[in-house]
Length: 86
Image (cartoon, rainbow, N blue to C red; front, side, top):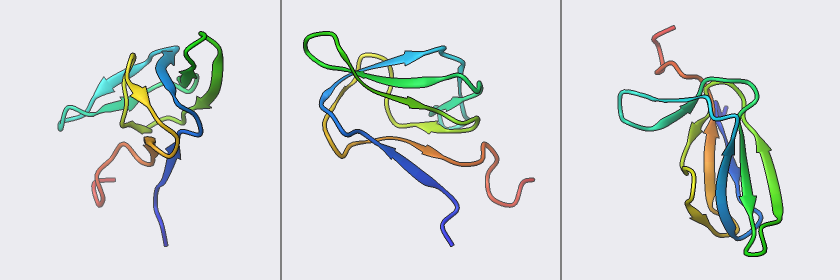
């Protein structure tokens, strides 16, 4: 049984984060703390190519301004709690 799933880019572009409600976990990684947070991919012409809404507790693998390519992982959905701590 898989307990997490990944969000992957379908396009090449630059990351924007909408409704940025994020915090860093104990490892320094970004975690979504809001329900309206979204990762946006902007192409070279400034067009929105992709909007990925994040669920609460999603761990981000990218941050604002990062360049991404198709197939690159943007985040991992899952619990904000380590295994066995709930």
